[in-house]
Image (tube, rainbow, N blue to C red; front, side, top):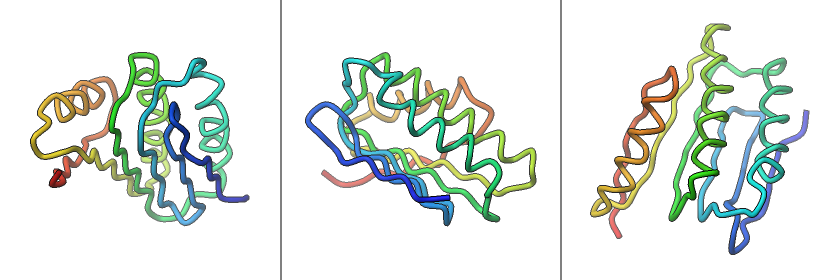
Length: 125
């Protein structure tokens, strides 16, 4: 299985999924077709289910996330949370600007929709 890397654009985030279990999505997410953009990442995660390391860490660090992207991120986190059934350690880090309470609340809203506890990691502006 190969690593997945999707370069950031003005409308899409950087996606970096490594077979080592280090997963990251960061940047702006306002693609015209959210399912088309995140589809490759979701397929990768389904295949990754057969090649899991002992630990999986997902870092989510968004400057902006539209509503359609929110739904896709919920789907991605749900896919990753299923790894726990195989006794894999799963960690999700929601990284946000320390002064941006709306960003933290968005993470809390997404966390509420999934079966995994988030770590909230503030970063200085």
